[in-house]
Image 1 (cartoon, rainbow, N blue to C red):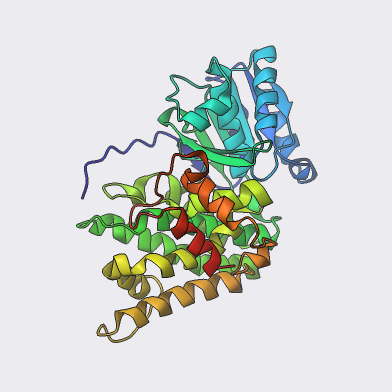
Image 2 (tube, helix red, strand yellow):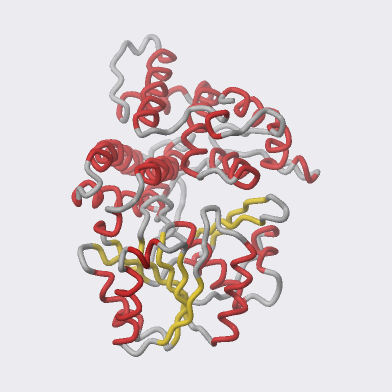
Length: 392
């Protein structure tokens, strides 16, 4: 096990009706907030009215900025930064899923950063401060409600970059599974694939003597796989959504990755799909993850046998580990398929014409600065291209 520091200060309020407390919770921390959200769903559901009434009752003033889209855009972030400065906002309240939260984090650090906020993502600049962020979660998926990470798409350059800082961990996050009841099944499927990928990126490692975090990863994965079909069959299943909602938080608050080298190759490969083709992040991960597994598993056979047996329930002779591993990968792909997720890039509407371009951009080779992806196996642009071709 490697040395580590675990820091997860985000306060989580979980359960029915918790969103109505937002005003009193924010009152000690802010006199004016930016209410940041996506489309009209929070107004149709009545959540907007609940939130604004709570803020008003507690005497917390607010400005608002809607319009967040999946794969959140840099242009809206810059609009939010200008608005916060104009309105003297001192906290960002994101109401939505990962896209709204990531956009809120970008705004929060952009307000305090002296230059172009895109430079922070592009050059990995260490920020010194950011406005506090609070969250009311409406889509469990990204785990951004408890992480210090944010991902933004530069639509002009067709680039999607991530950034992380402990200063971006939300001050508090509200998780009420009732708010998930009206989600489309497609978003449930994409969200579960994203949560599982957050675990996979930490689970598959060459670090040894990680029994505790191995077990945490495996328990989280099995919980997600058990409850996703239940929620899919009954979208108002509070108990199933509770497991998924909390599971998404645990998957990405850092705990399951402590003391182990992490990978993140699949996320970096998928960012190219989202940046160019604007596909849903989870849908892209569901395509790439089984392909990545088949490409890299021989570099750590024992780790993949453990996954196949402990997570996917494969039984078989250990004299043929390849068969055990491939059966485990096949079962994972079948699970994604049962949720309605495609297993190919063509199923996402992605052709072969830009695969090499994406592979070179993902590794930096397109910018004459190639840096291999991954921890379990180092992937250069030709490796990434082979994985893209495997799942075309």
